[in-house]
Amino acid sequence: MPPRAASSVLSRRVATEAALAPEAILPIVARGRDYHLRPPGPCYVPRRIGRGGGSRVTSILVTLDEAIASFARHLEIERRLSMRTVEGYGQDLAALAAFLRERGLLAADDVREIDLHRLRAWLGFLARKHAPSSIARKVAAVRTWMRWMRRKGTIVRSPADELASPKVSRGLPTFLSVDAAKEVVEAPSADTPRGARDRAVLELLYGSGLRVSELSALDIDAVDLAGATARVVGKGNKERVVPLGSQCVAAIARWLERRPSMVHSRRRWQDPRALFVSTRGARLRVRAVQALVHEYGAAGAGRGDLHPHALRHTCATHMLDGGADLRAIQELLGHASLSTTQRYAHVSMEHLMRVYDAAHPLARARK
Image (cartoon, rainbow, N blue to C red; front, side):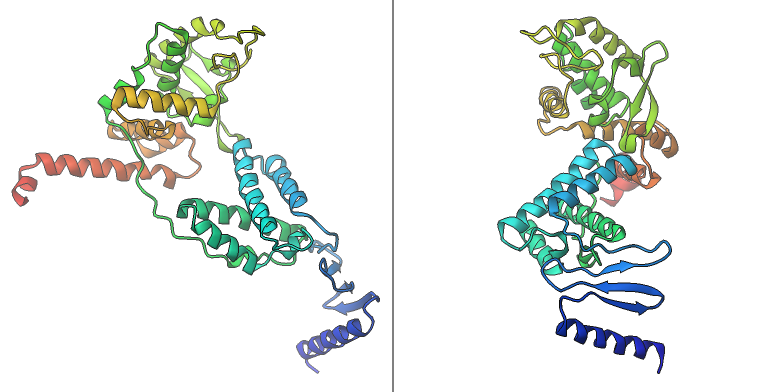
């Protein structure tokens, strides 16, 4: 009898014996590995025991919360992702868990109950409330989580691999003109401690192209005003050194002179390490930076929807227009892939075409 046919007969015989004696643990020998079948139930998963480096499938119940917490530790400790990335994964997975529980789709709160039908129901729910880009990110988070559980042996297979992500059209980055960027950066008044702080924040965002999370995490000892550089910790805890322009150095120096006055009114306390602090002395958070960019975007350029990342885009676009090559911009921004930086080349090309259409006599003649 051919080996495949023998394996099929063996599987049918084992299934029959398991149905007749469900309390028994039935050892099988198949392809050089020992398999033990436990009685079927809501938490049933075959437990594979074998030699070598193969994965093991556990029969121990793992709840959603346990699986999510373990995955977060894996991301933080083993993959060394940033806390913001780990929090993003956790929020997306916690939202999936809440959806499954609220609708009673899990009987035993066991991750092995999650199948393709449940995931598609969750996807349909997301489609009514979220943009395709947000849905694609959440699907990617769940897919990564379930593949990790499959490698660890928590689940037999990953149903998330069969989910189709929505198509996301990647638009061109939003950026300001040189004059508009100058008006935004110079909008804060340097006469007050808050104004001096905000001017330094805007100079760093536009002048050095920092991410808002990188700016918030900056410490005083990471800035070398004499050398006009700053040590920045970016995504994946990767450290890079960025240059500081002369205006940025001057703005940070003015802020450091006024910084001691920003303390908690009652406790008289201030974060000793943070470069930028709030009016209560604590480290300036991402939300606060976003709020001040909105404020000065409206005041300086009439753009109340301006966000910190737009200043980062503006920095890269203006550098490219000024003759910088993509590799230099990639190093400055801390992009892992050059393809991410190449988006700015498309922006500059569109700008070039607009200038050409407006200025060249042949282009005007075609109109």
